[in-house]
Image 1 (cartoon, rainbow, N blue to C red):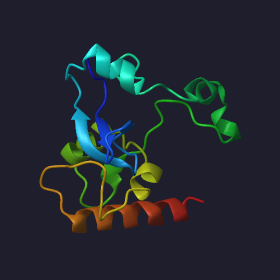
Image 2: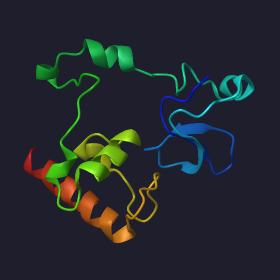
Image 3: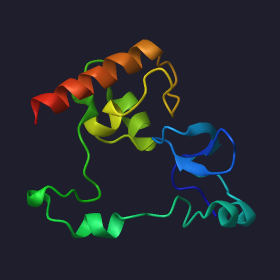
Image 4: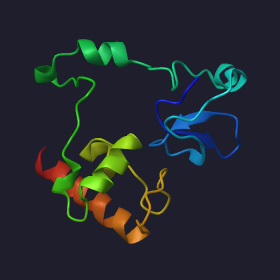
Length: 136
């Protein structure tokens, strides 16, 4: 099986979680990495990633009624300090919306982006939260 998303082990190494999960501790597989069938079975991986819980429901929701369709994303480059390359790295790690970015703990981000400091995460998460507050 080939990984279709970045997958992380929890600190106790008993579960595999998505990059944006607050329990992510160790990178297990990057996109394109081969995942042994035994590991896929042990961690319940499906088609190169985590099982898609609730995604069928999300696809069926009407966005005008507050639901979101899969594929929804925000233009992260609207935030100061995030250019195209950083936005791409964040999106590859599963952070595709301002809400997802706002949920990141800037002191312990679940993903590593080359050249990004804790100060960058602090600025980005604060800017995302501010933007979300303005739009509600």
